[in-house]
Image (tube, rainbow, N blue to C red; front, side, top):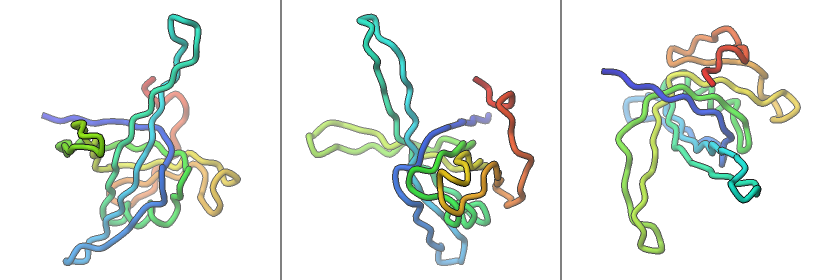
Length: 138
């Protein structure tokens, strides 16, 4: 069996990179994915879901180098087991975790200082061709 998720959203904070005791790079960041629609009452509605993304090896280093808070990204990855917890109000919550297999930087050069527009990076650290709008499955 295999599952995959594709996210397009914005980073909620700067990525945090660290190294495991064996020297493997891992970068964590959060991505906000928003959906907007007009409700039955004619009012604009919006719902935002947050995903915690982790990237490993060369992909982790590339993400930490180029991504910053507010960057628009496309992340293709695998959903990991959700972490459940109780929030400050005593309500049960779940943290949605995604292991990134590929990250595409969607912000233009002017949007995020120093970020290369249209660069993709895969889990192997190789750069791939830039995706066109036709490649997005929705």
